[in-house]
Amino acid sequence: MDNFFFGTQAIVSGMIDVLRGVTRYQLFWGFAFGFLVSTIVHAILISNSVKDIPTMVFDDKAVSFEKIHARQTNEPYAQSYTNYVHNVDKLKILFHLGGFCLVILLMLISLSK
Image 1: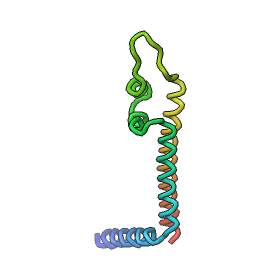
Image 2: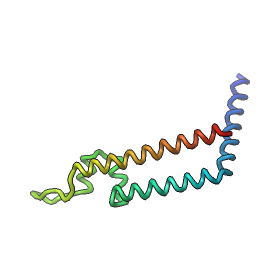
Image 3: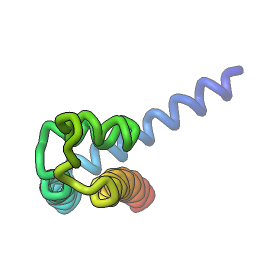
Image 4: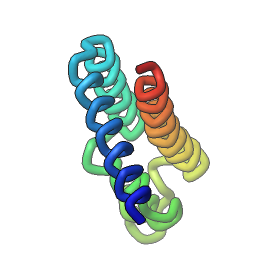
């Protein structure tokens, strides 16, 4: 039982050392900030409206299309559903790749010590 606590203490100590190293690594912060800004700018450009991003990412495609592009009765939609689905897919891929790259970056930095 003592080995478990000593192991846990060693793991936490190692994690703290890695976090201290990351906070001192200026290139990490520059890359992370630039990547975050780039992801946000691309998301805004793909969605055409900042307020629609959460709806596009978290709701079903058909439901979010109805919320964003409401139409009056007996009139066609102003935007194609196919183009909208394509933009939603690009937006979701953008956020998934952004999260994946950040996880990989954190793993590489933690292993570089």
